[in-house]
Amino acid sequence: MKTSYIRDFKHNYLVIHDDRVISDDYEIRMLGRNRIEGLLSCDMRMINGEGFLYYDISSKHVMKSVFSEEIIGFEMIRALFISLIGLCSRMEKYLLYDDGLILDPEYIYYDIESKEFSFLYYKSDQSGKPGVLFEFLTEHLDNDDFSAVEAVYQMYDMSKRSYYALDEILRWFQDEYLDEGKETAVEDKDKDKMLPILSKSSDENDSKNMEYSEWEDKLIMEQQGVSGKNKKGLLRKIWEFLFRKEDDNEQNDFFEEYYDEPASYGPDNDNGENNTVFIPWVENSEHKLYGLGKGNKTHIDLSSVPVTIGKMRGAADIILNDESVSRLHAKLMRTGSRFFLLDLNSTNGSFKNGVRLSPNEKVVIEPGDEIGFGKLKFIYR
Image 1 (spheres, helix red, strand yellow):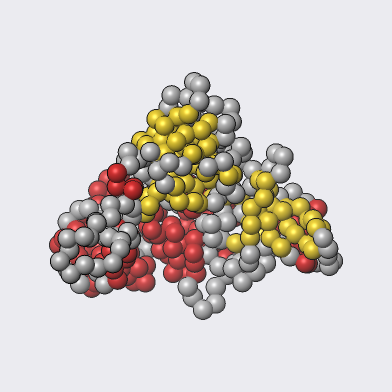
Image 2: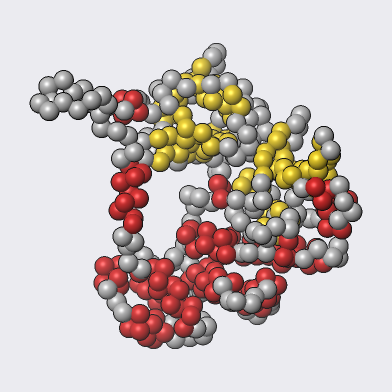
């Protein structure tokens, strides 16, 4: 599935080239002629004899970007799957089914103001496969929230079976957590029993050396009356996630990430007298964005990235009170010695040296670059 991003006068679009627009494809017609709550609205367009699907993503933000630095608890899991359950029910009225949903956080969108999720419907080899979503959720779970851990790992385990259906997973979630009379979270008095076991920060050194069978017995013993859903497959998943051994490749990844600049340039010299050690420019920079132009006295410190830029208090880290800035406009981040600018599907665009980024595009920034958020301009030093 090849995607691109395009902006016209007032809208941002996720665009997919698909010649089924030319044919009389039922699903394409249903998407183009109906607006289904919870799905990205879709327009069919013909350009130079080729078909394109334009999905409107205006004022929405990619789930992967919004939650990349967040800890996800049960309430957010609950909101996400309530959205999916309701959407699947509405789609059936149009003979559209869950095997057409792209359940990848890269293509799930979130409105930070309404707190609503929107999903992409497009039949491809990526559709109907929630594994990527569950992997993302496990990486960002609040390990102290037992209901969140239990729900996600149980659904993840179900999704990895040879024959599974998404509606089966959704029905399980609804039966366990949404029907009246079902507990939706561990009570405080019971949660206290779980913290020493499930928290990565509590007794971690002792737990890492614990054998699985010993850990399982201890967990079940201390969980008496808490859940009653202690299935061995689920427990092993949680154990592997919390106490897995460090990957041997992690050290190599560390060096690749943090030592990606060469130590010196120029020919080798045996006695070393003529060698000049290269100090990367970024090491001498202040790592700050300085406002340019009249009235823009804002300085943005990048010493503790990632930071989000926007005008919505409570959502953005750096607040820019300007009408051209979106609620969540952009994100600044660092990998190793490189700094990056990521546009968060902003209305008026993010810019590097006068060139506008595509929605959700990420670029490297270097000292001396001019960075723009809407009408506001900054110099990176």
